[in-house]
Length: 152
Image (tube, rainbow, N blue to C red; front, side, top):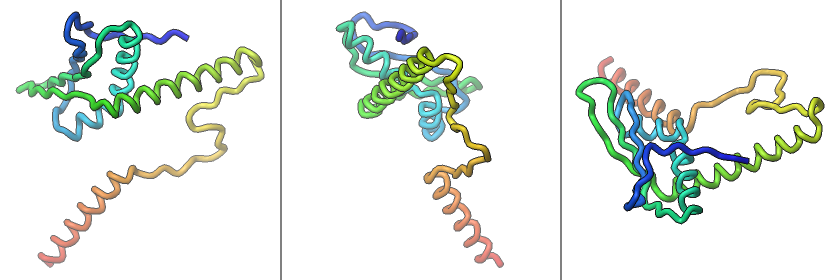
């Protein structure tokens, strides 16, 4: 299988890879969310793997975020090595799974059913908010309820 990467630029000396991103907010929690949702750790992990295979140094993975709206705040962040390691594991797993599905499809053609992420459920599934969001909301509710009791 061929996998494609598209770095903005390949460093000629430093091994420091940088990618420019335009965003709505450079607030820490928004950047963490953006990095997770867009899979930037996996993208940089793939670059790291490719350039290591090519024996080109890879020392860091940096994102420069620039806000789209004035005053165009800028924030520079690097992805941690342990997150890149997890991204590389996730990439390998995804490729193995895709290869297995592709192989099964090649063998069976029309008889193969390729389920999506939800599987073949006949009914709706229950979904829960993530723990961090539940805790954050619970803390806010407690705070507001205490404020209401104090002013009642």
